[in-house]
Picture (tube, one colour):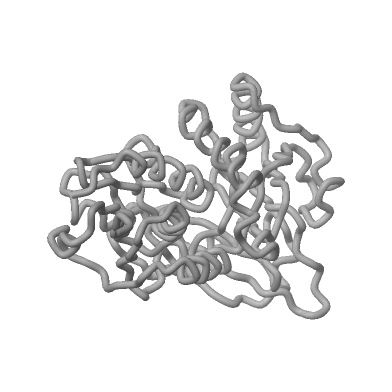
Length: 334
């Protein structure tokens, strides 16, 4: 009989690990809720360079390794149209923002992963507002349609015989499985008290292209606007704009102030977005940790965890699957 794995959590992390484990011959059951979670709201950026910041060297390293896995293998397991952008352009709106970008660029160079600076950002992306000049290009970064990736992983898991089950409240409900993986994001501490994972609210908007409007950018556009970060991610029908960040417990209601700030900042960077259709406002809960590093590995002989991926769940999914797969190779069958 194949070894059995219960995956608790049906977001991008749980699905990616379930798919890898089923490929490796495990009998996999995924316990999931059908309610949209963080993976449904995400921007889908695979952006270790443009998300990087001094002091987060370890996060940069695993992000770069996971981006390599995306390019080398993982994209080949998904439909080609899940990729919505290649390259990221990171720009500054004022002098203070430009100084921050210079700091990040110098840090990336010192880490041996330089990006391409520019002082003529509008030549790279003509949609940018007048006066935006400074920035850098991260050539290998990607963006994927988060919802299409989740749908493709779900279908791929089903083809491999992965079974679906209801969410669980305690680990005793999965006592029939040889091994258990906790991968349910902000709910992980409820199953394993003491895991340092907390919910951080993030609001995201979807703007739909309308006939007569300028076409969306081809790259991910990231900007610092008066100290706030905003991103514009191309989609087949428009763009995704995000994201706010609040310590508001488990509140997932979009707020007027959050939506207003995102629209103001996005239009300050790309004025043409003001003519797009306002299609959706949503909020999700990022599973954050104190040091922003994910918690991936073994908790005891039978239990593993993959949680706390923060804003990098899609980026780090292949690396997480590889890490858990290595642990499962040595897992004891109970």
